Length: 617
Image (cartoon, rainbow, N blue to C red; front, side):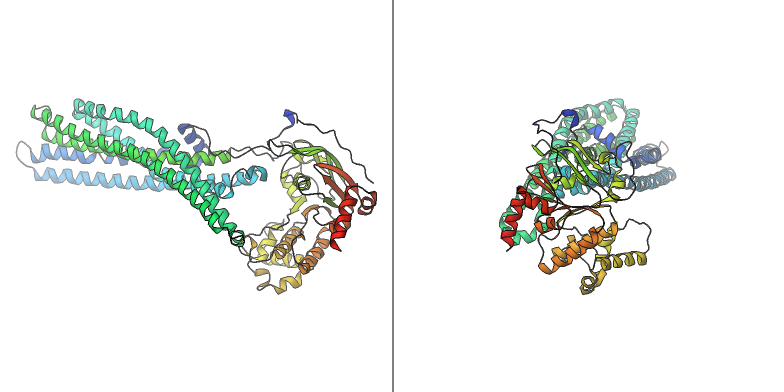
């Protein structure tokens, strides 16, 4: 019997040997508002494409809005109240010039909107792709720290909040600031005293808004978290609808969804109360300023400091000033919502990726695959070790069955071999090379995992099987031929022929139009087309009917013939048919050898096998 070397068990893992297996996706980035905006632009640099031209157009659009008060002043003073009497020609000329300027400003504003829309959509599309790519680069352990629905919400719903602000609020905030600046300059030209009055009224409000925005930001951050949790609860109940109905727990599930919806409603309500308070303060102060200006302006006009036209023009300028202030308070609230969404997306993108290519990663040549474990230990996050110093050699072109009780560490071994995770300590070797030194692209070509329940995408049998093809650029005819040949070589042509539309049969969402066994047949064909050097199988026949089990077993024989295979065996019939059996118990590899040797050795495997035989009689 093959000997197994095992390192002494330790209670602590040296700190310098720990990797990021404990990484988790934070609920939101902790960056401040300005830092969040800077980081967001770094992640989506397309947003700033042509920004200077856009700013120039926005400046022209803002300047165009001050044409009206200037025209009104000149029309009143030089046209209507002219010393020689009303001058209709001058009035018409001024009105025409104003109309032209307003038309030009409108064209500039439209161009700004178009340019901003294109650049932001390009930037946010890149952000979505980057976030989606990063989610796939994260290990399954890290992904599991966030509910799937909430994770999808970050790449979709949260990015939408950013899109809404940048495309609408961003340009409006920019134009509003420019408009306020231009209005202030012109007001100062007309009357420094009235300008000082206007700013004296608004400065206290600006200070209060700054304080209020911090509370609004916190409220919107909570809203984004609640929305993510709500989508997670809803998606789980939809995906698990069959289980909900089977166990008659629709009431309990409904209450859980209702609670998450109500949490979201309350969070939204609290945020909108704060938003209303901030916005109302802007409206109140704006109306107050207008009243004060009317009183003080009338007094100055009576005193001869301002002409009638200048007083009226100043009132228009005040409205040009107060309008953006009111708009800015609403836009700043939207900014807080966008920043909250941006922070959640940034938190995903900045989550450490544990499984990455080393700087000196190598591509391995294809060929027989031998696997070795060297003093491998593993712990999930901060939990206890689940593998304890395992050292093991699995020769190339060998059918290996890994057996043991539930929770013994079998699945962890499979995940380490496929490098879905890295060991906490020690090394897993493929043909003598540490997996951490093998380029991931090369590893995925050589090692393929077939899970116990094959996941299928919404599409046809042909499309799902073709995911295994490594060749790129094949036309539809070549793809169909390759898939047809694969099913034939696996002995599954008769099964395909019995499908309603053959290879073009649609499998439905998650493959639910097919039975569990049929989904597994498609997954096996997919793995066959990938032509891997090493197959890692989570036994595929543990929950199917006898007829399908025979089909799967026959297909697996064709799939594994001449290849290195590691099977997580739930039935000991799989171990009986293997070249080598690895027995795992509580994270320790306690026996390794052929079935016949282990069955006769009187150890743990012999006991497991005897119990299994007695149950199958």
